[in-house]
Image 1 (cartoon, rainbow, N blue to C red):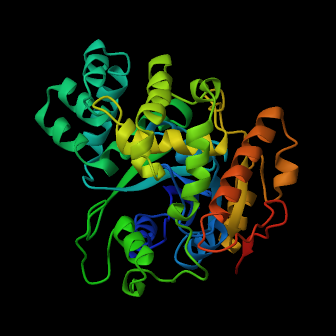
Image 2: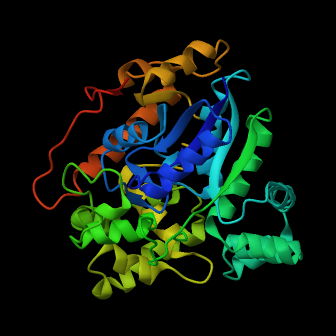
Length: 388
């Protein structure tokens, strides 16, 4: 048995994801466990489809077991996103997951590992800090600080950056897991260019939002109305415009200066703010990217604070098949509790209860992102997907 780990959002699950799972199987994996984002996703948005539908689609198209990456890890920076996911994979124990398969623009593992080593060495770099303060995005700052052309070119591509964070997290939490890269096929990340049957997730989301046909790019079309964050604009804007200074200062990665800028933006630019996107445009500046502002707004909406990024306390099962059951049978020294019941998992500790609360907040917010009245579903009564 060779168990591979995959980290994904599947927002939504598309043919490129299916190809990645097929390639992972071709590389020797007999069993595949996917750590998948829950209701909130990394770019400070809500997932376009229900997590149980996304998990079911994954199991129908190559995955064997899907574990939730809950809020706040799922809607955080690349470093925290990768760290949370790898902690879950490490929870299967040293006799469990033996390879981590990820898709990226460059599949040269030796170069990616070299980039990860350099990046880790630059975590406390004054040069990087200075560039960040001057408005240089983190990937570009690290790339520039390396001074190595091939490393700089690698950092220019988003999935390469995430791959580097996976490798760094593996060294810290699961050194027995081998990183394995699958070169992306077809459309690049966030690209509007499509091949015959593969398009980027962002392009597919745009098609869905515009009511256009996207069926050629996915194995399963959505079963219900898509969740679009614009449908919750008023609720989100209300939170942005009324949050107290202390609430804002408790947000992750928000300094006193940024908190002051947040308050000043809504007070001095209020006549220009009609939507959360308007606020983000007014708030961003050279040292704060639009993606970071969107994550801040999501943190605020869901109640995430800077104290919530402790180690992932549990693994919640969303879907599995017979091979998924075999994974649990084979992993005899698991260091993490895995279960289907959120009620059971949240009783493990105060930290587990906190993560349960935040994921429930994320699910409730997601369910508000519909065009009509929300149809709220309890996270405690959702049924996992079991297939043969």
